[in-house]
Length: 208
Ligand SMILES: N[C@@H](CCC(=O)N[C@@H](CS)C(=O)NCC(=O)O)C(=O)O
Image (cartoon, rainbow, N blue to C red; front, top):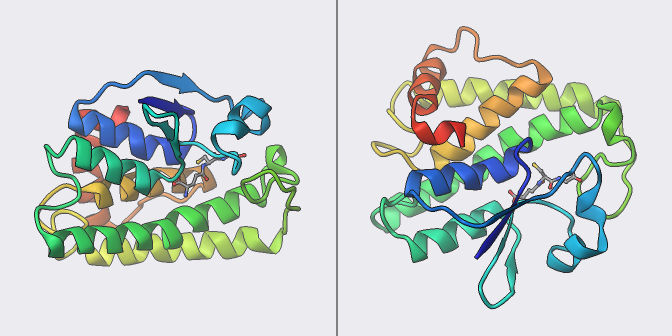
């Protein structure tokens, strides 16, 4: 297997933390997104959608979504379990993972990519040019703020995002909350979110 990464980007960090929690080391290739390596012919042959992370399997085929990659790794390296121990836990983890992606990661990306000078005509990922829409900066920020509020409220009743055990949902939430810092949204007074964030950030995997 070979892992295509970019250390500065949030999505591949999800896979890096997942790998670290499992104690897996993979041959890794850095893709320089700032230099546009994701649009090059060599990378497009692996992932025509021009995004990282990518996991290339030993038969040469590629997985190009964080969730698919983590799900594959969970099957190959089941311990420690990060996608639950039974059907209900797994479903809950996947539900939170999907919510955090759409309400957290995509909201922050909307605000960030529609504002930053380096993302002109790159407001969405992929090979097609998409112009920035300035109205989406504030909307993305508002959505991201609501996401932090709702996660704070949820964490009042549960130690980890999907219940009593650390899981993929915590990894995705950690990456989303740290990514919110890119648009200057902090945890602030959200005390349940703060307690959870200190706990998951203290795990050695958080620096992966
Ligand atoms: N849903 C995808 C999202 C992947 C994604 O958006 N990756 C970003 C980095 S965080 C990327 O490759 N961006 C390339 C670009 O900005 O051109 C996943 O989770 O794997």
